[in-house]
Amino acid sequence: MSISRRVFVKNGGLALVSLGLDPLFLARSVFARYRPLPPPTASDRPILVCLFQRGAVDGLNMIVPHGEPAYYQERPRIAVPAGDVVDLDGHFGLHPSLAPLKELWDNKSLAAIHAIGSPDATRSHFDAQDYMETGTPGVKSTGDGWMNRYCQHDREHADTPFRAVAFGPQLPRILAGSAPSLAIDDLQAFGLRVPQEAARDRLTRAFEELYDGAGTGLLASSSREGFEAVQMLKRADPTQYRPAAGVEYPPGRLGKTLLQIAQLIKADVGLEIAFADCSGWDTHVNQGSSDGQLAARLRELGLALAAFNRDLGERMHNVVVLTMSEFGRTIRENGNSGTDHGHATAMLALGGPVNGGRVLGKWPGLGVEQRFEGRDVAVTTDFRDLFGEILARHLSATDLGTVFPGYTPSPDRFLGAIRG
Image 1 (cartoon, rainbow, N blue to C red):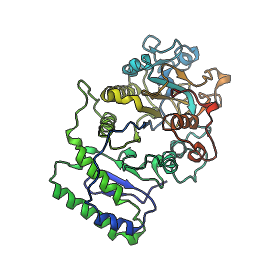
Image 2: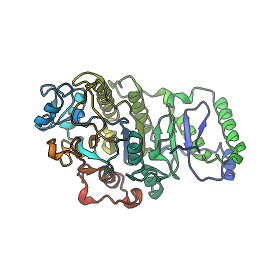
Image 3: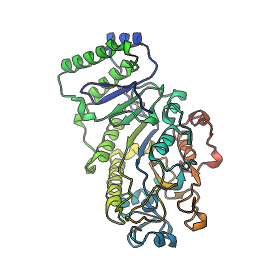
Image 4: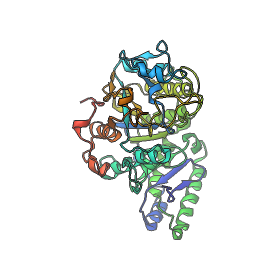
């Protein structure tokens, strides 16, 4: 689904999204644009950070079943050698590129979830990503994302424009819907060192242009959230941010994104949900084993997550970071030293509330008779049960059936990913 009703504040790097607002509200907001805002206050509200590994990460080489002989039999060229695996429990281990996360496993703030995925059997990236973001596998007509539905029906923290933020050039499907959301491409792009009057004039022109376009039918953005967000960012001044002593994020998009999420958390602007894409996981050719294409992506992921954890320090006590991917890869390597589209995959959860030091989920095994359609890791955990557990036990959501229409995640199926 394309989200056509989206407007970007010019030269600001900020997309403002809030569907269903009338033009008169926008006009009133423009004329009230300079009303003072209360200073942000420290908050102990729980925070969820989601990273979408678009392209279908190979869960078998991310969380390696090195205790399973079939893993090595089916992957003579791309299996991670047992001697290189960072062992977790004698059967599973981390890819060596994720070694920076081992200390989180040891202090029980990191858990892995294996054999997780969608009940829908599609191997289409587009469809599978759409189903994971809408939370309605097999249903293409769903108009909003499950994160936005959570925000629609749980209004307790709807007191800040920064409640739900996507980091990227556009709003992802998972945050599309009637609840206000922001999309931020780059905090540094706000040019907060520009004189205040110049910045104010730029915002004024942008909002007036939105109002002038009311007759086009595309006017659906909330200038209130937008203007307040920019004011709050100006006060926080991201250009002055420095990570905690000794913390260095890896170069690249992911490291920069997690640094900026840490900035917003420390700025106490009311962030509850942060979402970011982390692409490049479609490894059909020359995937590699301990080194190579996949290893490079995992190295960036491991370093970025470890830096984020150290940067936040004690603030991680109320933060959960979750990785997700639309599906996994085939058990058997292909003729191009890669893997093709599969079914179940692996995900990671880390943070203070995580019941870590465990590989969660029912492992189906890699035997031929245990595989899905004779080729893939079988799904034993519906992704909605993991997402639902995090919403219920971490964010205190009370109506999971509304968040996931047609399916109600049940505590009986929760994996125990969040501490009780």
